[in-house]
Structure formats: C-alpha cells, structure tokens
Amino acid sequence: MKQNGTGMEFEVEGAEDAQITVEMEADTEYSISIDGEDAGKMKTNLGGKLSFSVELGRDVAVKVNIKKC
Image 1 (spheres, rainbow, N blue to C red):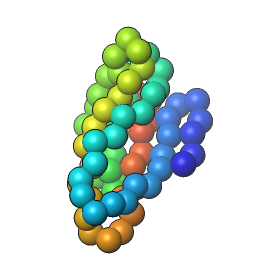
Image 2: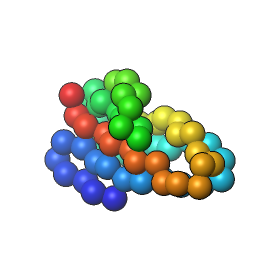
Image 3: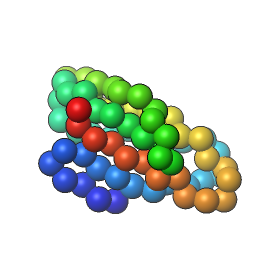
Image 4: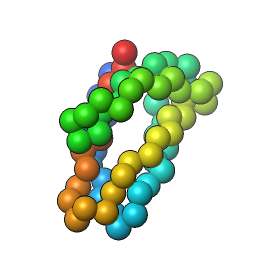
C-alpha cells in the first residue's frame, strides 16, 4: 500500500468479492479506479470513511487507486 497527502493505492485479492472501507480526509470527494477503470467519484462522510466494493475471484490481485478530486 502506498499513501500520500492526496490519496492511496493498494492491491487486494481474494476468493470472493470484498467490501472495503478506508479512512481518508473527512467530507472530501475522491476519484476511485479499480484495475485502471474509472469506478466514479465518492465523498467521505464526516468521519472520513470511504466504502466501496471490489469484484474478486480471478486468482489475480486487483489494483485500487484513490485520488483526491
């Protein structure tokens, strides 16, 4: 996992789909990409939580990239 002041990137793998929650800056919009494909923009809640799902099960790691808008 790599993290800096504007976002983070990491890889995830597993046998089944996963729900991921990360803590980012509160009340801020982030752009999310999964395996290089745009997954849209999401805004964190007042506690800074950002939750999204990732489809897994292909026996390969999936790259997740989260960037501050």
